[in-house]
Figure 1 (spheres, rainbow, N blue to C red):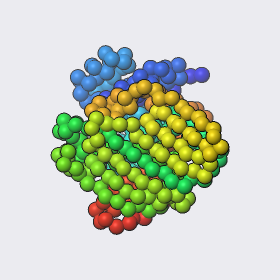
Figure 2: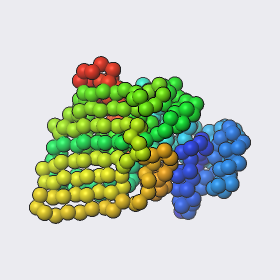
Figure 3: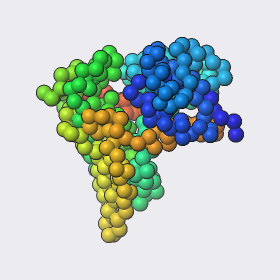
Figure 4: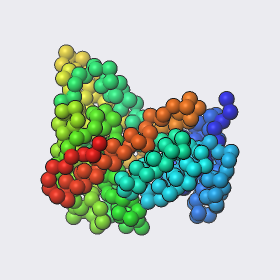
Length: 342
C-alpha cells in the first residue's frame, strides 16, 4: 500500500500531538512538507520530530503530488487557506474551530463540498476510548432514551495565557472559552446526546481574567430529542479539573469524566473505563495530554481518503457546535431563551 503524502501548515503550540501521531502512522503517511514563516519554528520542528520543513506556503498548496494538507493555523486564517487548498483537489484536516464566525465556517465547508474534497476537523475528544464506549452504549440502546445531559468544563488558564498576542480576541480566535476550549467537549456532547434546540443562560468575562471574550458560561438546555440539561464552562476554575458529561437515561446513568467512564444500570450492573492518568490539558499547560486521540483522528482521516468515505468528524457536522456556541453567546447578551439554528 503506497503511503499517502501529506503537507502541514502551521508549527505553533498545537503541532506536537499531530507530529507525534504522524511519527506513529509513518507506515501509511509521509509528511512531505511542514510550513511555518518562522525560521526558528522550522528549525525547532525539524530537531524535535525529524520532518522536512519549508518556508513557502506555495510549496504545499501548489504541490500536485500531495494527497492532503493538515491546517494548524489561527482560526481567522482558516477560510482563505481551506478555499485555496480545496481548489487544488487536496483533502484537508483542519484544526478546530472551523473559523472565527459561523458564516465563514459555512463558506469553507461549501468550498470543500464544491471541490469534492474531504474536510475533517480535529475534535479529538470523540476518539477517547471512554467516549467511544459511551457512544456505543447509547447507539445500541443499552442505556435507553436520554432524559438529562449536563456538561461541565471547569478549566484553568492563567492571565499569562491571555497576555499572548491574539489570545481570547474576536479578531484572531473568534471567541473565548466556548470556541477555543469548550468546543471539544460541546462537540462530544452533541455527538452523544444529539443536537440542542434551545438554550437560556449567561456568558461573561469574570474578574479573574483581562480579556476581550467570555471565560464563564452557564446555561440550561433543551435537546431536540426532548431531554434537558445544563452547560457550565470556564477557564477561571483553578487549577483546572476534568471535563464531565453526566447522562441520565431510562436504563441507567453514565458519567464521562476526562478519559474515564462509569456506567451504572438500574439492574445492578456496572462497567467502567479507567482514566489514562494524563493531566488532560485542563490546567495552565493546555497541551498536557497524550497524543493518542489525535492519532485516532488522523488515522481515520487517512482511512476516509483511501476508502472514499466520509471521515468520522466531517466539516458540515461540526457546524452544529458552532451554531450552539452562537446561541449560547446570544443568550448571554440578551438574557432571553434562544433557539439553536439547525
